[in-house]
Length: 183
Image (cartoon, rainbow, N blue to C red; front, side):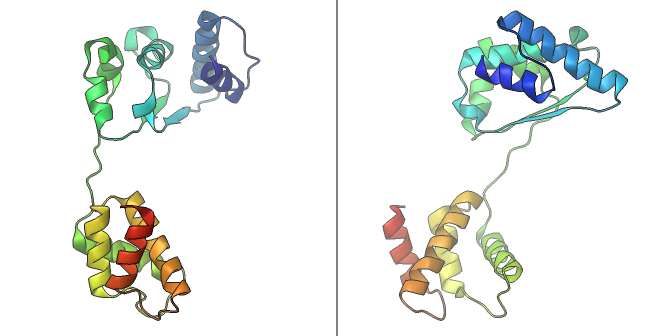
């Protein structure tokens, strides 16, 4: 209910109290944006693997417009890979069938992790290599290529390297960071 009220408020309306009224308010506001203001609302829901089945069911109802003959909005649902498994369950099929596009992010390979870290170090103003090739390989290995883990591990390596007064992040610094992070 809090989510639905927040959505109604975000669409510029004063939320009502009953769930069915909130559904209608959301649909009416979306249609107003789409038809009268010529604006396509975009809703982005992250960490949806944590969503309860009842919430997913409510999403399929609230975003059901005119028997799906028009789509006056864009709904982006993101979550960890097992979100796909959750959507394949029979009781979540109505929402799953409304999804127009699916995209699965794959982990980065060793070379991509190295390029990713070098790119962000360059954006941060680094004029020379901060991570050794061996360290970059170790980060790729320990993070398994998942960008969030790459970011966290690389940041932790920078902190450990700073504390150890290292000019270059090497495999030993990565080992220490991995140990401290419990990876």
